[in-house]
Image 1 (tube, rainbow, N blue to C red):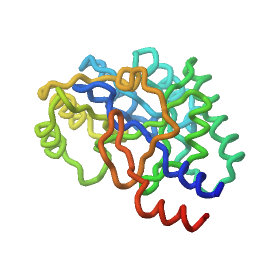
Image 2: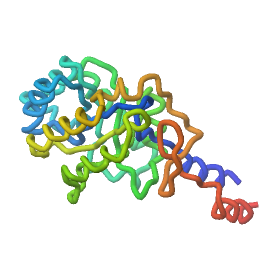
Image 3: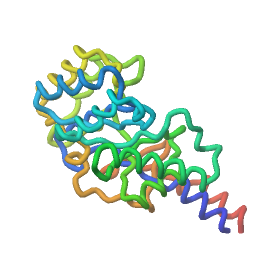
Image 4: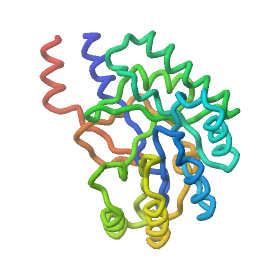
Length: 247
C-alpha cells in the first residue's frame, strides 16, 4: 500500500507553466552563462524588459562568467538554478541528489548574493523527479516549466507569431524557454512580436507573483488546463487497476 501512495506522489507533482496573470510573457534562458549572456543582457536592457536566467554552476570557476551572475541580478532580472546538465539524477540515490543539488543552490546563492527562488531540472516524458522537487520545495524554490519552447530546433519566428496571433492577452500568458545560443536578431523579433500583440515581458518573480508550490497537484503527459499550470489527470483506469492490484 505504501508503494501505491509513493507512485501517486511521483505522478502527482505540478510545475507552473504559465504566469499567474494574463497578458504576460516570461522569457527564460536555460543552461548559461555563455559567451552570449552579456549580449543578451545588453539587448533586453535596450528593449527595457526583464527576463530570467536559469544558470548552471559549472561556470563559477571562470572570473569572467562569475560577473555575469551578479550583473543579471543587479539589472533586475531573475536568476535561478539549472541543475547540472551532465547529471543523471534518475539513477542516483535520494541522499546523493540532496547533497549535490544543495551544493549547487549554496553556490549560486553565494555568487548572486541572493536566495534563489526558481529552478529548472529536466522533466522526462512529463514526469518530474520527486527527489529533486522535494529538495527545491524544502529550500523555498519553485521548479518551473513552460508552455512554449523556442529552443526546439523546428521552432521559427513564424511559429511564435502564429501562436500569439491565435492567443489573447486578456486570457493567456506564456513562459517561454530559450537557450543562449539564440540569434540576437531573432530575440529582438520575439520581443517585438510580443509587444505588438499586447503582452508585457516580465521576469519569473513578476510572472509567478505569490505562487505557492502545491505538492498535491500533478503534471504529466496528458494535460488539462488548470489555473497556473497544466495538470495531468492521473486518476484514471491505470490508477484504479494499480490500486486493486496492491490491495
